[in-house]
Length: 112
Image 1 (cartoon, rainbow, N blue to C red):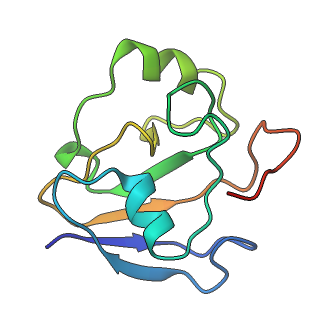
Image 2: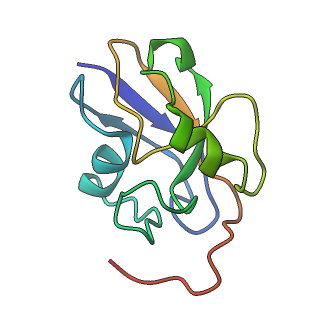
């Protein structure tokens, strides 16, 4: 079972954490199920960038981003070559190390 190492984030995961994930599970679902309240303003429909993550390790084990995700990522704060929308990214067979960006472009954070 792959693990997701979440690097420390000041508000969402101050100490960082390691969680277990199922192969084929959406990264966002694994995060939410483990108490990491990552934003997802569009309810996981690939219509915003609030669930943006940066994959520091394990990027090549993930499904490829489609054109819609790539278009949305162009709008993300702090975009990097290994950025993904966690609502569109399925856990592969390898462990992942992810960073949650410091900011999103969401103007009003909603509690889900």
